[in-house]
Structures are given as structure tokens and as C-alpha cells.
Image (cartoon, rainbow, N blue to C red; front, side, top):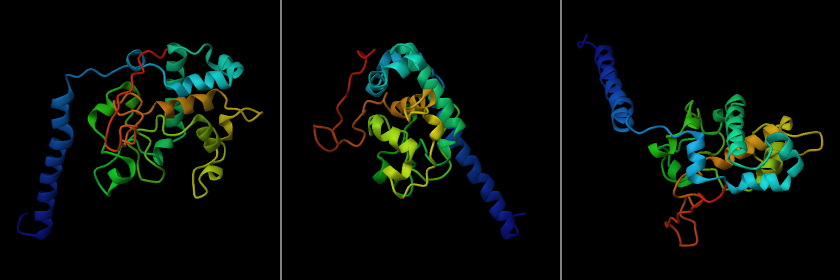
Length: 223
């Protein structure tokens, strides 16, 4: 087999596959297997409710109460789980990754390369790393844009980003043009992504302490 070029390439391919499996599969498993996966309720208890969910309750009180009841930890968890299912069902992951890759200068566009601690929760199943780079990475989208921005963007993306190829989502809105249950849920989920990180909401160090500085935001008191 090793007497031909094809045989050499075949063996080399098997060797590199084995190395990749060890480095990207077996090694991380041995490092992180003892760390328990956080549930949604545990994350809410530790980090609280993002302000954008509270804003939805305040801006659309009648509709919010109809869809989710009172604004508390239980309704927040329900909205997150529903938004997660919608994100998967609408194949948002096809164009939007939740993984900043260590290639193609992605860190200069989307921030530091993703790390393991960003994925240790149950809403990271199934893995939503994405397929290809079409839209921006959303792994740290929480707090980057307002609810109003997301509402307008889901309603008609080209009105916000003229070059956008994202489809419109009219089924996220009721007959009066307000976000319905699914609309509020997907906005809640997107506004949650990355909110549990220490860097939130200054992922790129753009906070009041200057470039490169990280200011820890305590959200545990928000219920």
C-alpha cells in the first residue's frame, strides 16, 4: 500500500483523522466530563432575567400577559425554551453560527474565539455551531441591539440592513403588527445568547473602562 502515492495519502489521512479525533473529541471529553451541565432554571437563578425580557412585558403588557403570564423566572424559562425550539425549527443556525472559529480572522470581526465555558448549558443541545458564514455570529448577541431593532429586523430585514438576504418572518407578528408569542420568544432567546458570560454586555471590551477592559455585570438581583 505504501508503494503508491494513493496509499501514502490514505494512511496519512487515517493518521490525521486519529489526531483530530483525539484533540477535538477525546481530549476535551476527558477535561470537561466532570463538569455538570447547567439547566435553564439554574442559569436563571444564577444570572437573573435579561432586561430585554422585562422590556417586552412593559412595552406589550396585555399581549405579554396573554402569552406568558407575569414576568418572572417561570415565564422567562418558558420563553427561552420556546425561542430555542423556534430558532432550531426555522433553521436560523444555517446562516447564523454560534461559534466564533479560530480561522479567517473571525476574531477581528466577531470577537474572541469561542471557548468551552460558553456551551455548558442545556440550550446548547443540539450543537448550533452553524454551517457556513452568511449572517453574523450570534453566540454573544445578548444586549448588542435593542428589542425594537430585532422586531423591525424580523419583520422586514432589508429595512434595517439593505444588503440582507434574511427572509421576512411575518408569522412572528399578529394582525396588528405586534410580536406574537413566537416573536417574543425568539427575541428573548436571541437576547439571552451570551448573557451568562462575565464579559456581558461588553464582549469586545468597549465598556466605560476602555478598550480591552471587562466589567462584570451582576444580574443576579433581577427577577
